Length: 390
Ligand SMILES: *Cc1c(COP(=O)(O)O)cnc(C)c1O
Image 1: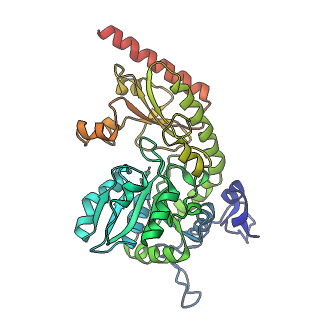
Image 2: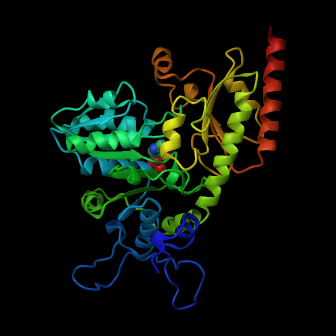
Image 3: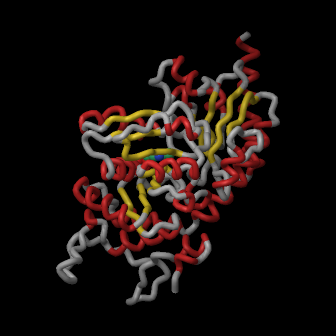
């Protein structure tokens, strides 16, 4: 049966599953071995060679989800990102990256690339001309992230893939925020799609993992470096991740619905200054999002009115907990100005559009009425405290 051609939830549930021939169990047997007899001279199984039974099974599932020929599973999202980038860049090469990037990726590029002799440019914006103007003769990779963190900007996949094809450049995307449920970048001509599987693929805030999917040819090149760098994922966690992905389709669709509902509620709220959610028609990139996403995701950001303290608001929430991470079944918040973007100067934050009152909201699968009630009581508390202090 060619499960790759099956629908989303069937692929999530079945593709890549290992058969339990001995006991006919419903789940993949877990093979924890690090030592396997040679099957023939070409097959030497070893966890760091990314070819244990569980690793291979899960890679098939993720490749099918991303409409790719092949995939590899890594020990973290950053292991997947760093290995993919370095597989296509060598000393003397140049990379163009979009201006808003996940902090870990930004740090990797700005702190490590110089010592490898790799130069880089960040775009000023996300339009075609912003990418074109940064391309040099030695540009080998264009790297994007859409929707982006934390303002949920949208980069046009078709525009970027066309630019890359025209110039013979490899295109890579961090597809973490969308998940394969909402966006399949390879369908739009992007070459390589990367995930922090710690987020929507894991979905329960208990797994750290990464994944890359692309053509067989590109994955061979990434594999060659991957086995030397050694960023593979333990088979036990591979097994847990396979289990998690079985429910990814229904989880993420529930999160899409909840996030849209919460975005609409916040948009109408008198204590909220702005809402950033690509599913809202008022979002400046809504039309691009509509053309390339199947759902708008579970992430949104909003700004409180300037007189209300974001940190007090966050502390007053009871159900919704503060968290550095995101994408779990439970709703969480993060204040970028105080955490992920705290090392930037106030001026630089302002330039990037990160207001002090900005709150990133990872919407979970709870009942939205309960989330709304939590936000209402927190806002009430913050306003009462404010009145007492003036
Ligand atoms: C978390 C995250 C990463 C890094 O993944 P790790 O699993 O923490 O290494 C990369 N990109 C995005 C968008 C993320 O949210």
